[in-house]
Length: 194
Image (tube, rainbow, N blue to C red):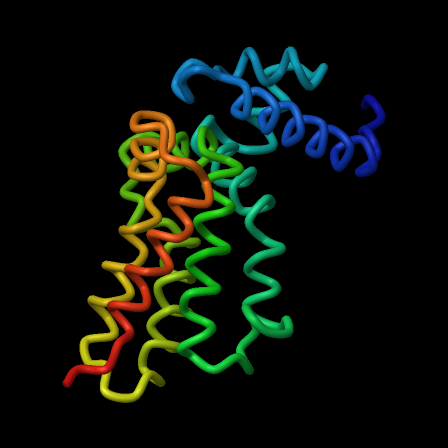
């Protein structure tokens, strides 16, 4: 019976695969053009290693997205202001949306790949449920605001990867302009009704 590779190799391979996929998505013209074969070659591993570790391309994209987004999620769950749970909701909601927008600006093709992966709806992804729940909980604390369930969905729609790509890639809108427009929109949504 052949010796099994130590777990250190598996962890190293996983990091190499994630780094290679990250770089390929960052520099691609279209997220759909990045194949498992491309990722395996860039990571220096066999395709079987990818399929064993991630199941398929969609699984790999989900894992990469979750890994890269984890620091923002951790800051939102446990961190200090402006993202942390102790932040007043009128400050936290815009900060959470800005953090998610900046992430999608920095990882546009990865976010597009995730939203377009297979037949998965982005609304059924685990990260979407987490973001929606986190925003909804903060929105429920905003005095005078009703409909936090729908409002959380509507605010998250404003940072969908396909919209970000359309604004930045298609219309040439500058990063800071997109951020300012989102902040203005969020402030308008959070303004108490007269």
